[in-house]
Length: 312
Image 1 (cartoon, rainbow, N blue to C red):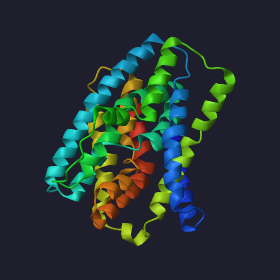
Image 2 (cartoon, helix red, strand yellow):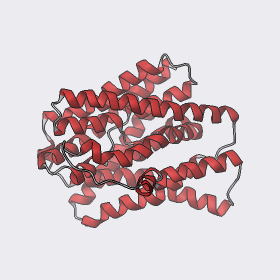
Image 3 (cartoon, helix red, strand yellow):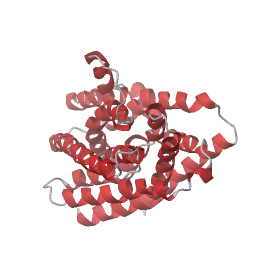
C-alpha cells in the first residue's frame, strides 16, 4: 500500500508539472535551468544526507557487495539491451529500448521510493548501488543513442574524468568518506544540506511533467510506445527477481536491486534523444516511452515491491 500511495504521489507531481507548462507559467529556459540546479546542487545534497547514519561494519560490507552487483547488473542490462537492439533491426526504436534496458529514473523516482520503502539504510544502499551506474549513465548516452555511423568526437582523459566524476558521483565519494570517518557535520551545515536535498524528488517529478507537457497528447498515443514499459517495467524486473533469488545476499540488498529494476525509464532519455538523434519520430518516440513507463510504474513499482517482500 505504501508503494502504491507513493507512486500516486509521484504521478500527481508529474501532472502538476504538465499543467505548469500548458498554462504557460514557465518559459523555455526554466526546465534546463531547473535540471542544472537539481543535478548539480540539490541531488548531491540529498546523496550526502543519505550517508547521515550510524556507522556499521555490516552495512559497509553490504555496500561493497552492492557496488559489485551494480557493475555486474549493468553488464547484464547492456547485454539484454543489445539483444533487443539487434531484434529491432538496429533502428532508432532499438537504440531507445537499449538505453531503457540499462538506465532507470534512479534519481527523481528511485531515491524517494527507496527511502520511503526501506528507510535510511535502504536509501544508503540505493545510493551506493547506483553510483557505478551514474558514472556510465552520463558518458554513454551519446554512443548508445546516436545513429550507426555517427562519428564521435574523441575525448581527452580529463574530459572523461569530468564525465565520470559528475557532481552526484562526487557526492557519493564525499558522503562515503564522511560515513567511514564517522565525521558529523556541524548542525547548521547538515540541516542546510538536508533542506536543499529535500527539494530534489518533488521538483524532479515536476520537471518530468514539464518535459511531457511540451508534447501533444495525441502524438503520444501510439502502440509502439508501449514497448518501453513492457521491457523496462515488466521484463527487466522479472529477470532481476529471478537472478537475485539465487544470489546469497542480505534481503535488503536484494530488494534494493529489484527496486532499481522496477523503476521507470530515465526521464532524460527524451532530452538525450533530442541531442543525439535528428529523426523527429525518434524524438517523439522517446517522449512517449518516458510517458508510458512513468504511468505504468504507478502499478509496477508496488507490484514488484510486494513481490520482493514476499520472496525476501
